[in-house]
Image (cartoon, rainbow, N blue to C red; front, side):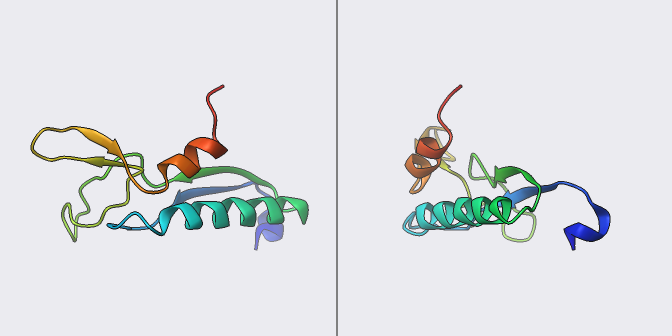
Length: 95
């Protein structure tokens, strides 16, 4: 438990493989709500890192799982927002 070590918590890989782009937005909202709830209860959650900005290579599955907030066209390398990118952008506006 976090109390045992008295150290801050960082969520380092929050995300979902969502080829259709229909579940990622709800997952992001749910993870943010969970972090806010934990903080309200006194848990020292200091950061959340979404996995991943771009679709990438997964060692055991290749390029098949789509984790990225942006889709990468492997032929042209064009990047386009995936489902959920808008939700993440709204929660993390530029500083």
